[in-house]
Every structure is written in C-alpha cells, then in structure tokens.
Length: 146
Length: 146
Image (cartoon, rainbow over the protein chains, first blue to last red):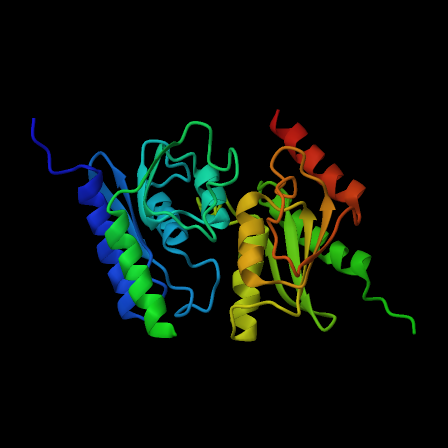
C-alpha cells in the first residue's frame, strides 16, 4: 500500500507551522499532533506575541490535542516538531504519555534528550526528519537578529 | 525591622491555593509568585478541570505573572510552590529566569531537582518550607482516592 502519510509528510506540516512563527518574528519552531494519520492539533511558537515563556509550539499543540480528544492523555498520538523539545516540553510530553515524538533538528543548547528518561518510558523517539530544512529556518532567523 | 513577609508567610498562601485544588478534587498543589513582597500571581493545579496535563500550579502562575508584569521574564520574582516542581515546570521556570524558587514538600517520584542544572543558573532554590503541611495535604488526597 502506498501512503503519503509518513514522518516526512507530517514534518512538512510542522515546518509550515514553523514558518508561521517566522513570519511573526518568533523563533521558528512548529508542531503538529497526529492520531490515525489525521492532524488533530497544530501549534507554533508564540512566546513573544503572548509574552509567555510557556507558549512553545509543543505546549500549544498538547493543550489543543487534549481539547480535541476530550481527554488529557495522548496515548495513541504522535507529535511532530521541527526542533528537539526543551526540558519544559519534554516534561509536558511525559505527562501526556504520548506514543511517539518525531523531531527535525537537534537542539544542541536546549534540547532535553541529553537527560536520561525525560520522556515517558513508553514513548518512541525519532530524530532527524527534514533536519536540514528545520535547522536552516532557525539559522536564517537568528542571522536576521544579529 | 519586623516583617511578616517571610518564606513561611508566602508558602501559607501557596497552601491556600493547594487547598483550592483539593476542594476541586485536583491533586492539591498550589503556587504564588511574589515581587517586592507582593503576590502578583496565584495558581493551583487544574489538570482535571481543564483536561490538560500542562495546567500545573506553577505553569498557571508563570503565565499569570508575566501577564501582570507585561514581560515574559520573572527575573526579580520568587515562586512559592507546595511541592517540588516537576520537569515540565522546572523547564518553564528556567525559561522565565526567575530569581528564586521556594518549595514545600519534596516530590520523590516526579521532582525535577534530581537533574543537574535543570533550573536557571541564577535561580536560588530553597526547599522544605512548611513541608509537613504540604505533604500531609497530598497524603490525605491520595488516601481518599484509594
């Protein structure tokens, strides 16, 4: 069976979200949450617009997916996010018991995966999907800030 | 100079918040954020009411304090929270660059302070204020669930 719904497909949707953040002059990170091959939540970084350090793409997506599902656990869901989650977002993903986390670029400075057991023990982790495109968008953003 | 505004005073206010959570059948954790001896934000755990794993007392307080201050950094603020922060909340507190975190009871299972450098390097940490009262409230709550 041919399916267009692979990790690259959904990461491209997360990248679209990251570009929305970029256009708002936010650090360009985007995320989508998928259940049964369907996007049930989208989010992009809004820390500047909302004046709120907690307004990361992942946090907004988690809240939105739980709202959609009518339950706080995301056990059969996958998060796609353009950047390796930070400690805050990894902690939130742990609480959500999400099935799978797929990230694009590695975050050498603030990525949480350097810590052992920071995600839920049942959460599968995949990294490096569209990593170059995800990190290029970040580089262009930070270059424009210098 | 005698001042009533010591760590115990503000922890008691956080405990009042925890009791509000208890009354709502939420895990009883409460928090307040203080700037210049003034409470600028309060929060209590609302994960069940809001169906949202991110709705911890600390997260709500951080968002609320930033809203009050009109800026996302909490550099001259102190958070009082009845339970040692989890990884998610510690990560959020790190991003906020809060000056000081004071907690009541230690959280042996989910406390984040077992990890090195999880709070911001400039954040002072004080633990054990009204620890017995804070943990007793948790014990009564979980006993009622059994």
